[in-house]
Length: 137
Ligand SMILES: [Zn+2]
Image (cartoon, rainbow, N blue to C red; front, side, top):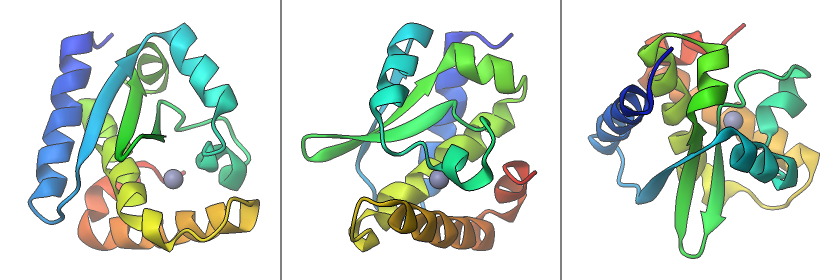
């Protein structure tokens, strides 16, 4: 079981790794399980599920909050998925690529989300192959 401190540390390390290559301005937010599921059920960006058809990799998501994007993580959900801090970094890096990709997303339908997933995955794999592979089945 990773505690909140370990999850936060891994997430911040991922943000710092990504920031060396790209300028992004995001908040990292940590929610409890109830808040997280409430938010995920309202979010239209549970893209991984749509694409893979499996309820995996939903320990994180990106939401708009005013002008700044927020990457939301849930310690309890993450602990169900993994015991490996490196996996958290992979999740956060993936979401950071979505933040970067945001301006290319034209619409709000499934095809737009799938196209975004493809671009994100390609860029992610090119720059951080080791982490990108962790999210592949
Ligand atoms: Zn994604």
